[in-house]
Length: 305
Image (cartoon, rainbow, N blue to C red; front, side, top):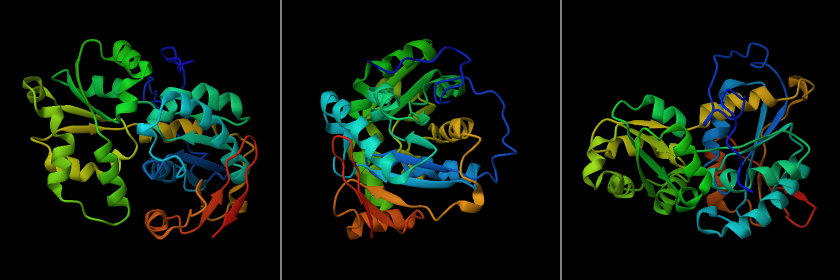
């Protein structure tokens, strides 16, 4: 079943919820372990937000490299795989909170993953509500993968929080590829970023866009390139900071003390987890150690490299 939209005022992941003013004085130095998960390296943007908000946490990272990218996989295949992957990764990393830093996975299988785990799970959804509040022209660009745009959940978010606005959507797997290349240290030409987001602005209504939702966690990796190649100054909004706040809300009070924390670890679901290109991406974002995790019906094994 699709992920239900939380009731107004409920403390859920803030990309689609009201965000009360909250401070976290006890969490800045708090220990504990969080595992941030995505199909590739896009979730590194979320891991960075969490680490910045609570430096005492150990923020591990996991990528389902054995099934990347999710954007071109069927709903049935993802619903079957995601709970198994989550169980395997949690068994290997033993986090206090599991963060699905992927719009496609969250909008499709968040309830199933929550049912499969015994720890809190934080999901990611397009930041449509804050974009609707921020836009003055009420014309909003929605930049996502084709999979996220096809989900009923995304349509319900628009209906619930942006019914008064015009949404111009574009699905781009090419922008995912460009973000992965950037993460590896490559320098794709700026023209490629202009082409990737160009369809948002191609029609007459595109001239009214003043706010763009980055509805894939890969896309904030190349926010600078998108800003540089936009046809005019625009506001780009993602859900990373809201996810970080919700992660801290759900962190158990009895999480591992900060003195027992260890260096961050990365996990991947292919045996060649430490292949040079993938390892280079992770190392550039503070994850020099990679462990391969075997995904099966209910078992996991880890082998650090």
